[in-house]
Length: 439
Image 1 (tube, helix red, strand yellow):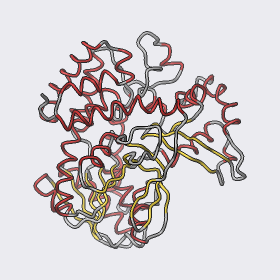
Image 2 (spheres, helix red, strand yellow; image 1 turned 180 degrees about the vertical axis):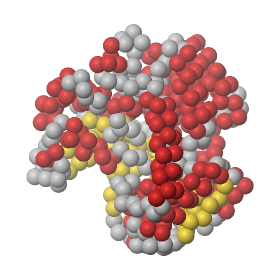
Image 3 (cartoon, rainbow, N blue to C red; image 1 turned 135 degrees about the vertical axis):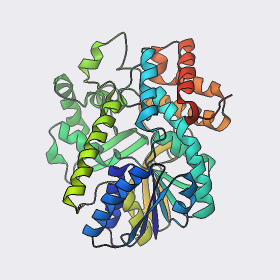
Image 4 (spheres, rainbow, N blue to C red; image 1 turned 30 degrees about the vertical axis):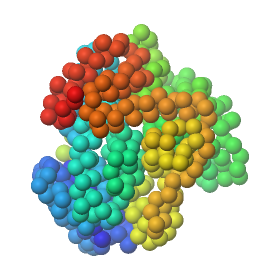
């Protein structure tokens, strides 16, 4: 079996996913093919994975492929392809996504999923994903593509609608959603045996049901504790708690993410909201810098100390592979096209995040029915941006980029139309060769 990791320069994530596979008997004898355009980063990943490979018994083998000219060989014969690329990297593209909007008074926290940053990231990543798709269709047409790259809904939606690649979008937040909520509210005693239902869109999936091991609805107690949590100035997860207060449900992704997915919290006319809700503006650039420095230290320690062990993480990838290979059922929260209206009150061409059953026959989305109307409405404010960004990438019409930015909840609530268009033009110019030519 062959498992290809695209974007293997994402060393920490490659370590987690491939390390997880090395922990599974049915996967550990695989060829683990590392692909990236950066030879230095691939070598760093190879070094740490070889060390882990030895500590796990030396099963399978690790191969490396660098540069676009070797991409097809990296993919050839793959059974699973894990995608974790970041087109344009922290520098220059992430810096551009933050600094140019800031000149127009538009502040962001993460800028990888929605907002003007998410739009630009989607537009520069889709062409690369399209190249991957052509290669996969030629040299490993039966492979499953496990996409972890953001903007998840935009990229997964494009791959599922416009390519023949079997694609599932995967996030880290679904499997830890209810746990984080109960721990934040001091309800750890309710963790064991809890039952839950999550559906919506990536980074804004709704915890529609949460019950304890006896089937008792936990939302009444959760709601009784929300005000005290938000009133505590030390607490960080306030935006999602405020969702419970105003929309009735908790959502999957962190508060620093969700602060920029709507028009409510980052508002130049209400600067006091930043402190009230502990919103970390410019969080992602800080996080990138810290991660780069942390990895340098970890890599130096690895070279000094040698073997690196690994315990299987909660990432879905290895569990999906194991389930398909062994034909054993497993449940995930996956991102899929809403074909057949899996979520009845969202568009059929939207990328939605729903429970999916995995087995030897593949990945099977489960019908959800209708979301509460207010949750569907919140999702639609994001889906509008997803669909228009994909349309811009497919048609190369700049008007669709303008429209995506105009309809983005945060951007549209802060800037007028003429300013939005000028900002988009500046971003396109600054990204240069990382973007296609738009008409």
